[in-house]
Length: 448
Image 1 (cartoon, one colour):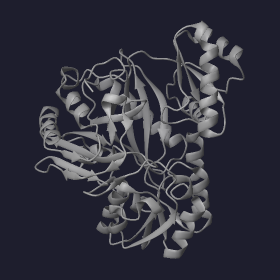
Image 2 (cartoon, rainbow, N blue to C red):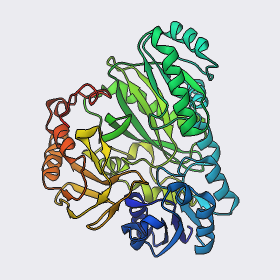
Image 3 (tube, rainbow, N blue to C red):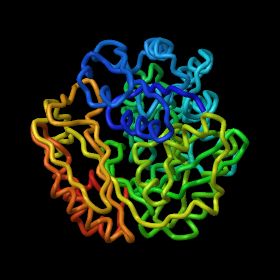
């Protein structure tokens, strides 16, 4: 086992990794930008090193600054958290070249899964169902039209280098395709430096269900069951839970088997997530793979009793997985709400400012992962996630009741938050009955 771990991230995920490091007796190093000089995660580490200006490109996205900090601190390993450089195969490769352990999958797996078109090809070759569509970038509108005619409308245009819903455009009929193609190309070029698009059949009212997978260096790959992630805004998740409510046993078996087969096909190591869309008939289709630790990993930890971050550290040190598939059992239900500094009444517009008052709930079945405290600044430069509120119980109903109570007792002043919206989700009959799909928010199912 290495001795010192640098976390190339900030906020609640940096604190979460530090906690796992302490459990293993490892020394910790934080990095921070000028804007984060007084941030909570900076105090949580044994040592902290400033890596640049407030804009992420000058600090948390500056790979050379991060590597220099690791060399300065004599760190043996780097954990990327999620976001920022976590899915940059070039960063993972640079870490490896520097003689430092990258706590995550190898750069080749990250590269393959980061290219959405190559990922579709690889998963299809591994026998994993993918949505009908193109397996190569579409050269122009005419090529997109030909594919759309073949697979049928509606279709969705996606950026080949995309993620987080950026560069996506739904097209309902042929007359809308040219304008959507131009707009999606512009957005992809601006966000990713390349405008290549591909076309997929668009599913109406699908569920978004993902499977946590984990691999080691000796070839073992297991799943840690599924998570329901259908409640989203702008294709980004707001509420996640495990088990997925009302999922047919045959669908779950198919999903978990496909996830393991897909991970094994690319020689995947460490923690990762296979994401799927599930249609109303129980059919499922590969969406993408997140080659990193997920924001919503706590719900899997709560239902399985496993510590995924400790497992990441051990796997990165070369240890084999300590459990077989039969030992990984869902024993209860857990639900996570992401609390953002956003105003739901204004289209989830970010709400930067200073957290003036913060009262967080506690009690049986409640877990908080927070990156803020009273006086914390919510910067315009970073994702406005404040904290994650996780409730678990022996049953889904018990977890919901604990979550509803915890949301009622959560007080944050100084910035607008998504808490009022989350209360509405948890109170809704659709959510309580497990009738969820990815288009609920845009169709007005919840009161913001």
